[in-house]
Image (cartoon, rainbow over all chains, first blue to last red; front, side, top):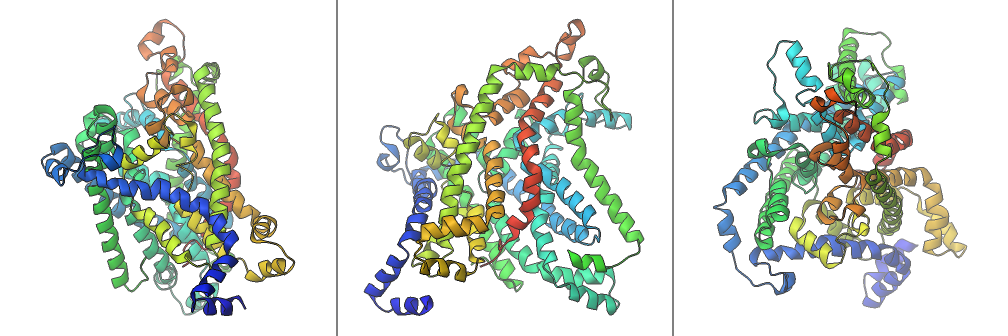
Length: 315
Length: 298
């Protein structure tokens, strides 16, 4: 009944108005959400115009004078920016390549367990670190990898000449990748586990009857069952790769001046220079805009790849 | 889950290998937390010999005493409790109502709204414009900055919307015939039947607010309004807090018998994580279901 009235409503203006009236309470419910997104997402997006202005505190975003592409020309000669740019791209892509497949493998392995108790146990344990903040985890890692921490003691005992990876130019990035895997592997695998439990058990039984090996069952039943989930999550991960907060919290809490050259990302660079050095807001907005642009390009590429592979993309 | 019960009965080498790998992973996941716990109880003369031990050799509560006696700790703790309680209320009210409305397929403009919301997951103005707008709203050094701008998690909102889509329409239609309006339907029917789901997301938001750090880092400079995570950062990383000067370095401790700094740091971690550990069993019970119901639909 509702459906018919909707179809009819589309044909005339007063009809649309009537449909909207039917939903008046729903519009009231969604209003706070709309206001929130305008204030905290869309106004900042408009604020990107600062990239082409020199920020004047007394005049605000709107009134500050335009300077065209001047900031971008300056950025192209800023060695600290290029170092941060390089690190951002390297750290994000390495995180993607190293981390992305692991939760899928973990989910497939845990899914093989017949005993739900073992399954529950591993799932519970591996998910726990997700709920602990990076501030706390950085404290724990600093303790483990400090000079009198367990890592160096263990390495010395085994006869290696170890130094703390937190202050070593070669050790810092692997540290970032591994601690990220350690924190998020369990949490990220949950979604795949659920997709796996959604697979019809008869498929497994039939395959077993036909004499399919374990790997064959993984290859021909489990994998096709989660492929579309993997595709969507791949796009989401790419979209989030460069978003503010994801790497910022981790790196900002773990890094120190000896490793800036390999650890400073665009976000930490923007934060450091703006709030400690007091750089021009317009200039730093332009830096942020470049990052958003890279992130958008990656997203479009990921979506294209996924579609080429025959999966449904994000758009 | 049942399907696995009927499969395979024998234990093969494959199982053994998998169990060993998972076992090692379990130790790697668990040990750091265990290490934190035993160091928090260690006396400095024990810990100064070696950090490498598997069983606690002493139970010394002086680190905890020091923390509980610190006024700054209690202040930060109170701020975090306040932010968590108000933050969850704020986030849940606006995201539940919004998600419910957005689940109505016939609502004109719905697709546009959903698209606009999705875009924000992939594109944002960056730190500086966000900072300036929040500043213009008068939220600098205001604890609301940890509640309102941090208020909506877009992913949670979308998952909630997908979940509401799975509730059969017929349920609402009969209530409508009885004269209930949409607010009443949401309050009296939808929310009660999805209580466990709501609880899961309330806990997710609670963990987020409890771990709130980023907005505080940028917008809160008044230490009286700093939440627990900022306090922790001071104790753990920048190590110039009043607490750290109350504790001592190893060298100093050879002469006197005060609290060893790492014990103090680890004890602070334990105390600040207790609320999460308390809610974790509840979180754990529902989160898989909560996250999955329709998380990837549409």
